[in-house]
Length: 276
Ligand code: ATR
Image 1 (cartoon, rainbow, N blue to C red):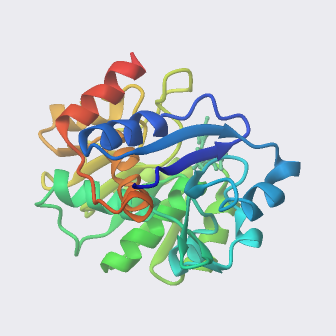
Image 2 (cartoon, helix red, strand yellow):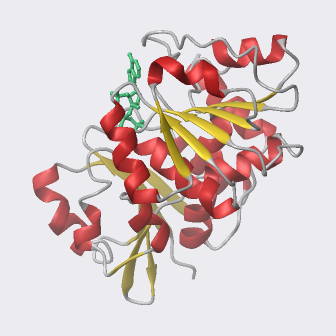
């Protein structure tokens, strides 16, 4: 008899998570006897919840707001990427040890390389935003060997703090001057919430980007943001935010269920239908 494998995503609230759709699709397509559920965990119950994972028959978890930093305290080990990013989004067991990792940088870079194989890695990148998503992106780009990363944010102190943490490759520029720094860039990334349905628009004129530049928007609702529309009009390569969400889910699924899943068009369509 095989034992059913269970995993899930914890947050507070948790209603908004699309992770069950992703993992549910993979469980079904690989015919795995497993489950993946949304679990609402009140911050005051987090410690006991994490300590009792095995007792509750859970092989691991995805972690979302507001628990992404707090889980560090309750894991036995934290991976280097999670430490550098300052947050964990995936928990799994190695033997009896509970490991806290972060797969956002992996999701970001895997989707970029797949969607834009011609990306010129040796040119500077310009990142808009200095929140949690920006941290994963900076980590990924530095790891990849991008020579210079220009970072800008409405609240400049957050960008300066990230530059101190991530080192000399990061050059902070004023939010109001971002258009003056597009000329030699190989990659422009929007890591802010601007342009998302219900948020303010992202206002940036990208006509001075080189024709070989790639525009990556981590916003996925709408899928084609104004930034990506503008990039398409100029004939630039574009990368949407949905792939990052899907690819970041791959390593967790593999660790819990023992099969490495793939991000297919069918899966993209399932999530897109849910966004409508
Ligand atoms: P996440 O973890 O998803 O990155 P976050 O930490 O709340 O979320 O960061 C949101 C990002 O969007 C920040 O860079 C934020 O800029 P501030 O640091 O100045 O708040 C940016 N952002 C949100 N609304 C914005 C707006 N109206 N104009 C400019 N930037 C905005």
